[in-house]
Length: 285
Image (cartoon, rainbow, N blue to C red; front, side, top):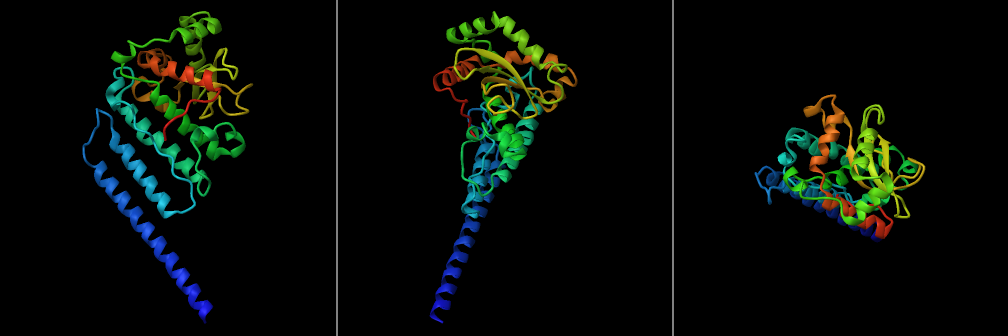
């Protein structure tokens, strides 16, 4: 009888603990929803979305002890309309808030109950891990990197490749213009058929650049995607959802115009990091 009483007490305590965590999770999610309904912006950045996502993630983590902490969609570092006229605000909103969010939701499902690790750490063995990590994890990493590569055109025009990156561009491609031409050729529908990405990558030795195209949400960090694992410093999304509202079937025009919003200060930073660390660029989310 004593043993049974002890067991009943333990079960009752565990039940109360779970109930309390669920209540806290509900409060967090409810508060985040209320907050997100306010028209709040910090320095023009739509930070309420990130706050909402983080609060939901925190609530989910409390409600499900032992599960991996949820990945989240990082805030854009600029307003939706910042990349106009080259990338339109409706495309940015749908791309960021819907498409990227879907990849995040699905990688969280795929990783449910598993240890929390940075999304970068899942990339190398993504093919072996299966479609959940390969497609959704790749989609999350690719987009989280993509948003940071861009900036408003009036700011982008004041950025340029560093002396070190310029030297490697010349060594690898002949000139900056040659690199752009080869990149645009690789991004053309006939070269990257259907959906995918085109990247400028550093090899693992850190002494050469290559242009690599990958299908779907694959990226050059994944073993088995290409002849060798490479470290992307710049990439463009050539899925139709990245450009169709403005450009329809004119993908080459989208790719050509995209250079007007590339933030070379960030690309220089990516280049320096991968050359020094022989590792992929870390991303938020």
